[in-house]
Image 1 (spheres, rainbow, N blue to C red):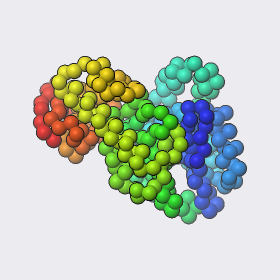
Image 2 (cartoon, rainbow, N blue to C red):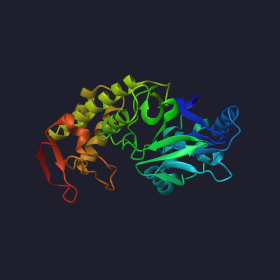
Image 3 (cartoon, rainbow, N blue to C red):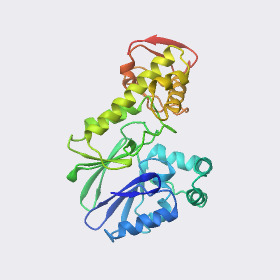
Length: 304
């Protein structure tokens, strides 16, 4: 586990027999070169890359660190699509957002993002130097294309920004209503004794993930209840009393407007950023407003 001091980003090196796997590649070429130098103190073997999602601090070092012999970059299909379709727009947005950190902004300006070429839809197990590594999309949460990585022989789960321990969850591109279900699935899939490596911050255990899942489930319930009651987003955010709550509520309201609630077990793959949200993420809210795809203006109430 390697942590970069800028943004406290966590990267993970998994070493097998004759090859390795490096999870996340930091923000730009200079950071990636430093990461590569640190990793090379551990192994000289060629490596695969994995991106946990499409945000710059986890994948903009791809081009610097990719194996020249052809080992590629794994990511969820949606993460790769985001980079392929909107790299320039995303880079401009992040440059503006981080302009107060001139070195970071300058590094971003010089990046030509390398789009992942090994794509995951739900889950795949790869073998890295004889070690089975599971790549899993537990559902949308921090982004629509989050990927978790599990190393079975040491019971280590690399969670990306689905879990953050050095700060509050980031809602910038979040599928807020689906995030609790994604964490619930992670908790169900892996042994209780697993060590969890967050996307930012030190390693944690199951109890931390359970607390974060409960916090996000409570937030999702407040959002759905506030939406059903016609409550202003600011009022719901004030009751949530957590960092980033207003953005979370605004995104949740937008996803409900777009048809995020479809009925038990039904996933939606629409164009507005609510991919994969199901009512399983909203069970705590009970009686909710649901807008159906194909008739977004027609709201009805129902028990799910």
